[in-house]
Image 1 (spheres, rainbow, N blue to C red):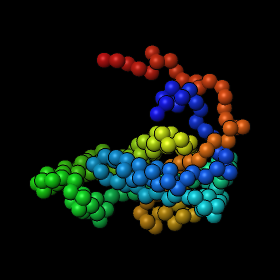
Image 2 (cartoon, helix red, strand yellow; image 1 turned 135 degrees about the vertical axis):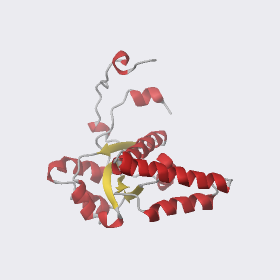
Image 3 (tube, rainbow, N blue to C red; image 1 turned 60 degrees about the vertical axis):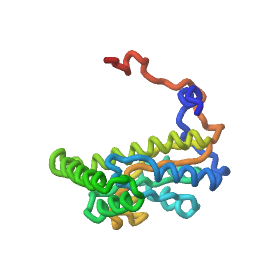
Length: 215
């Protein structure tokens, strides 16, 4: 990964609608997305991968009146991913996580798996009843997954643009998301930049002495 190049470029905000991500590259990216870590391996996400014109048009038409300027970005992107987060953690989801870990042999020692499950339940109860931030905590996992996926996209030569400019109620309704126990958190548009619309000016960031404290 060319870090100097990444640090000196603007986030792409406009895509070349004539270019499509090759399927092999897309599958690598989705494999990475699936493998991205979440706290306690809770995996609170479901991802809607929009590649067809119909899918992208449905999303673009349901961004909400205030966010229609993002419709062009969605339509010209090769793919747009709707990242959703569980509204809560029901017992059946937690049991599914544990069952998959056991099947995959995540812990070679059954006693360690048992301790892990106890610790996970204890931590989730802390979030649910102590901090009372269960959903907010899960959303943070979603953003962590997105950030890591953006880095993977850059490594694969794909531009990734996060979008928070949308009405989640409208998007949830358009894709019948809430009926599944999830809700839309953020969108991630993927593709190749429209070079004619790229910003060429310097990237503006605070100086290091304002940003870093060393102890």
